Length: 112
Image 1 (tube, rainbow, N blue to C red):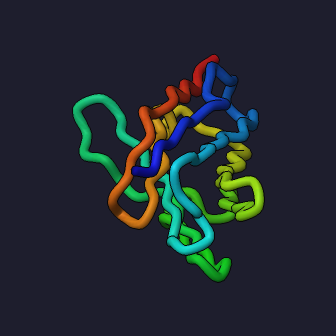
Image 2 (cartoon, rainbow, N blue to C red):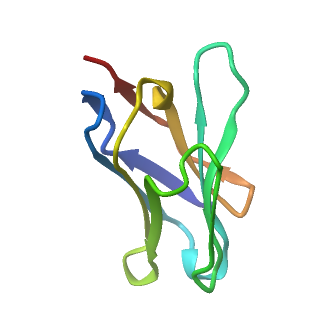
């Protein structure tokens, strides 16, 4: 059973940056594709970014050029670097492993 713990969320002003972390235990992340999703109030949970087991990345159009997903298999950790944040990025952010395991989520609020 893979357990995931996200951290790094918070309140940031528009234009600011945050780095989300997702640390895994109970499994070996190197075997899997990893994902970041987000869910705003009243909205469905949307895919933000994906990094494959071999390091290929994909991004939602809304975050391309601003967000970067990365992973360190030795540390069993995946990160989401978020730059040039906008109010529309406000959501709970979740990491996901292989489409199966979810973290508890971390709140990101972008507001002045």
